[in-house]
Length: 637
Ligand code: GCU
Image 1 (tube, rainbow, N blue to C red):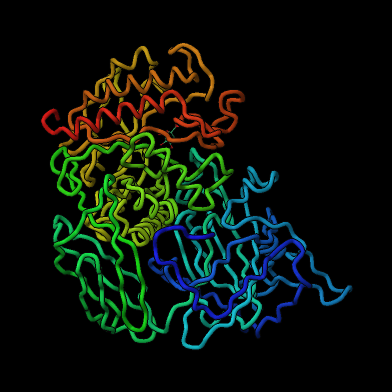
Image 2 (image 1 turned 135 degrees about the horizontal axis):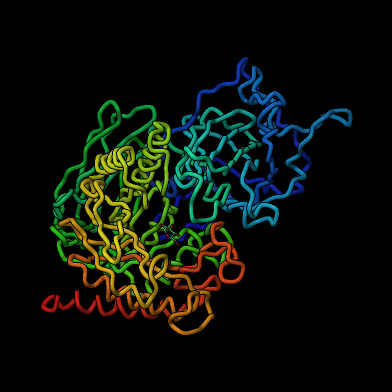
């Protein structure tokens, strides 16, 4: 995929790496002479921390058509005694060997060369009829040529694989990763073959109670390699990670760090922001780490109205990386939210990572830009990217287009709160999200979850996640979509988790799941916190094009009337400082079975699955226009 951002894309200095298109009928199948197998299959994983700003590094994309084999019984992974082949003495026997029969007498019962192919990045559900509802293992294979250079490091990067990925290179296991929405990468420096290489991924989207998310979600369980696959070339010593952002509460100071990796980590590193007249040098310690802390005076602060991005250059140890970074402050003061010190109302909308005009997960920046353009057209300055980390491209687009972002991990509904592995998984996904997006000005909120039921183990689980978010990044707000409690028409927001969060943010469905349009105006909210109130969900389903009176459910008029009622009802809440109605676009869900109105679509979108705007879209825009006018004329606020 091309990477359209106004960022300095990598100029490929890379050794000649040509991608052998992996089509269903590749060139004569070549039996990859596997290097001598270790006496016992190596279980040491080659997982390494993802490289910050990977797209700006010298890399080759391994996107394209990958051959695939559907394997519902995982017999490409387990022998008939259900022992994993890759843990046997030889480590061989699985589909990852990509074996070919040596002659007509040999038994081999799979064949990637003559298998169907699918687009990567891309979920499998939307690419083959028989895979639409499939949950299980699919094997995917790509081949490519390499000519690795001595002294260089090579990283095999995956933007995301949903949900569990086992990755093999030339028949050897690189490692395993869990989590459907965060990047991971393997050090393949001493594993790349000169010439033809074969990467095989076992992707498994089976849902399990103890995973993150758990078995019950209201979105399509798109499986597969849903984001880019890159092979990056890094110098002997490289800039592995960095944070360059304004310090918490100080708009005139940049605070962060540099992390070197490779042979000689102790380096002199220069950080320059030419347009801001900044050039500063730090020395990393023996572990490759150096703190950044320097004054900055001549900045244009990033905002939705003026999404200013600066070219930031980091160089040291023979490496150089360039990024596009915006600088802004975000904080709360009592019940107010301040962006760059000025009170702001979060004119938002919730979104899934799905553009209904392109079946399945978005595959490129164009798919994402369309969605964010609809939000801008609605006069949004903010989007809730629910309920999981969206792609890096989406966040960089929000940086460029001027949309603040609520980023979220899929700690959704009824998680296994007492399972330490479940917590470690959630914590890892949150850490990976913050690690990836900590330099993105658009991200203003880290959300640790959605609608989780109050209880001791859950309060501990979630408050620990909030602590993790703050320890990784103290410059952004931390929140969650809290649940509410109803008694008659009294709605109370009182959740012990809120004590660890910066916002009183919650979902409510007055007029849809409880009450009707006629009754909902009786509801009163009691939000028991001196914090900004952000309503993270409300909404109603409407089948696009179905018109009836305002009391007829599923009609556009019902949805539109509900939105008007919501504005009246919510505007009575003191400290209301934002909202992200549910949801920008109709989206696919296995929980939505009404044969006529839904047909496996959740119809709460303000835009239909055909990209047509419903009546409520314009009502929402009108409300935000009014809000903007009120906020832009301080006297009347
Ligand atoms: C819930 C949930 C959403 C879901 C929505 C709905 O609050 O957070 O993921 O899609 O309500 O019921 O449509």
